[in-house]
Amino acid sequence: MTLTEKILARASGKARVQAGENVWVNVDVLMTHDVCGPGTIGVFKREFGKEARVWDARKVVIIPDHYIFTADSMSNRNVDILRDFAREQGLPYFYDVIDDPNGHWQFDASQGQHKAQYGSRYTGVCHTTLPWKGHTRPGEILFGTDSHTCMAGAFNQFATGIGNTDAGFILGTGKLLIKVPETMRFYMEGAMQPGVMAKDVILHVIGDIGFDGATYRAMQWEGAGVYGMSMDDRMTIANMAIEAGGKNAMFPCDQKTLDYVNERTKENGTKSEFEPVELEKEQSFVYDKVFDLSKLEPTVACHPDPGQRKLAKEMGNVQLDRAYIGSCTGGKTSDFLAFAEVVRGKTVKIDTFGVPATTKVVRELKDTQWGGQSVWSILESAGVRMTENASCAACLGGPVDTFGRLNTPMKCISATNRNFPGRMGNKESQVFLASPYTVAASALTGRITDPREFVS
Amino acid sequence: MSHVLTSPVYVCADNIDTDQIIPAQYLTLVPTIPDEYEKLGGYAMIGLPDDLYPTRFVPEGGLKTQYKIVIAGRNFGCGSSREHAPIAMGAAGVEAVVAESFARIFFRNCVATGELYPYDAQERLCDVLKTGDVATLDFDANTLTANGVTYALKPLGEVRPVIDAGGIFNYARQSGMIAPKA
Image (tube, rainbow over all chains, first blue to last red; front, side, top):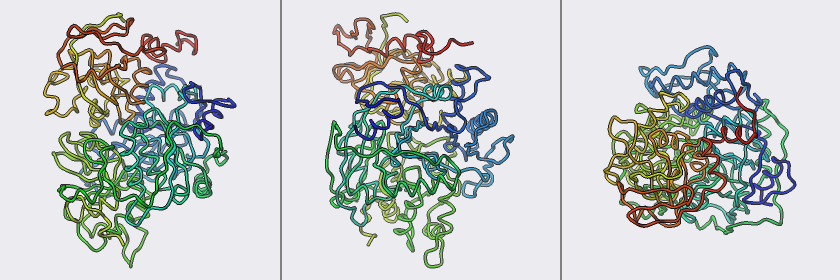
C-alpha cells in the first residue's frame, strides 16, 4: 500500500484498502475558520439539534484567519459566531482574535492596517498555525474546511479540504465516508541550486502534470531530494497539491518530522502519541516520475491558473504593478528571510506588501537580527509595507478594505498559491505566482526577474 | 425532482474556479442563514471576467438566473473548498452542471448539499453549445438534447439518490444510516 492507503486503512479499521474503495474513516482533527466555520456550525445545529455536542472537543480546532482585519461588519460577526460556539462547546483549541471569551470582535480601521490589533491567543493563518500549535501528527487524519488543508501532508498525515456539510457531519459523528485516492509518486533526486526554492519545485511539477493533473489523487513525495528539504519546504510543496486538483499530499516521516512534531506537541501540551506510516516496498502508483532538483530553475505560474508554467528568466518583459509576500504557503519565517536576503540594503521599485502567516512569524522577524538590525526593519527599510496583522489577507482578495488587496486591474507577482481570475481582488487583474526570492527580485526591478541575479 | 429539465443553458470554458463562481468578498454570507442563502444566489458566477462572459448569469440586482443548466469545460469548480460555490448556484436556481470534468471538492460539495447534479459529459459540450441555447436534460436516460442533437452523459451512479434526497443528511436518514431528526 502507499502511505495514503496505509493511513486510510488504519483509520477505517481495515487491514488493507485499495484505490477507488469507499471507506468510513475516524477523524483525528477537524479544523475550521471564520469563512466556513459559521456555516459548518449552522449545518451541525440544523442536523443534530440546538443542544447537540461535538463528538470530541479536543479534536476540534477553530482558527479565525481569513477576514479579520476588516471593518466589514459581517466578517466581524462571523468571528463572534465562532467564539459563541467555542464557549458553548468548551473547545480548548480556539485561537480567538480577542482575549475576552464574552467579547465582540471589531476591527478599528482608524488605527490603520500595520499595527497589531489582536489578543494573546490569536495565531493567524490556519494551515501554518496547525503545525505550530501541535495539531499535526504523522499517521493521522485531518479534515479542514479549506482547500489548502493538504499542507499537513508534509507531516506524513492524511489531510484534505472539505465543505461545510461534510464538516458538520464530522462535528456530530467524528467520521466521514471518503474514497481512497489513487497515488501519484514524485521522486526527487539531487538538491536545489542557489536561488531555487521549494515553491519552484511545486510550480514546476504542476506545470508538468497540469492544473488538473492530480484530480482525485494523492501526491506522494519521495527520494533523497525530499529528505534534504526542511519542514517549511515540505509544507510549501504539500500546500499546493490542490492547485493540481490533488486530494492530498503525502511525505514520508523522517527524523526532521519527528523532531518538529515532538517539540511542538510538548510545547503546547497537545496529544503527543502518534504512529507514522512507513514506506513499503510494494506500492501501486498511477503515475511515477523522477525529478532532478538540481536541474530546476526559478519558475513562475502565469495568469490565469497555477499550471501556466514559465521560467522567470524568460519573463523579463512583464512589467509589474505590485509584489506580495504572505499566505500559508509563502508567509512563513523562512520565506520572509529569503525575501529579506534579496531586498536587504536596496529599495523596492513597486508597491510591495508583506503579510506574515502567523503572529509567531511577526515575532521571529522582529527578533532575528542581521548586522544589528532586525529583519523586520530591514524589510521596512527596503520599502516593504509590512503588517503585524497576520492573516490570509489579500491572498484571496477578501473584503475591499483588506490589506494588499488588488482593488483595480493590475499585474501582481505573489508568493501565494492561487491565481485564477479575481483571486486577489479585481477580476481583471493578473497574478503571477513565484517563490519569495523571485517575488523579491521582481519587486526591486519592477518586472519579473530571475533572482539568481541577486542571490549568491 | 422531475426527471426531465428543459432550460436555456449558460456556457463557460475550462477552469471555472470557485472565485469565479462566488468571489471571496461574498463569503461573509453564511449559507445556513436563509436570508443570506438567498443573497448568495444573486452573486452566483459574478466573478467571471466581463470580456469573456458579456452575458450576466444573474441579472443586475436579481437573485435568480434563467439558466438552470450550466455547461462547462474541464476542471469545473477548482480552487477552494467553499461550499458557498454550489450553494450560490443552487440558490440562483441552477439544477445541473454538465462539465467535461469536475474538481474533487466541488463535486463532493454538490452531492453533500444536494444543491446540484454534477454530470460528466462524454464530449466537450462547451465548444458545441452557446449561452442561451435551450437544452433538455433527461436524468433517467442520462442525455442532454440541444439544437436537435442528443448527447450521452456519464450516469451519476450512486450519487444520484443522495442528490435526489436533498443531500447527505437527508439521504442518511432516509436510508437509516443515522437517526431521524428529533
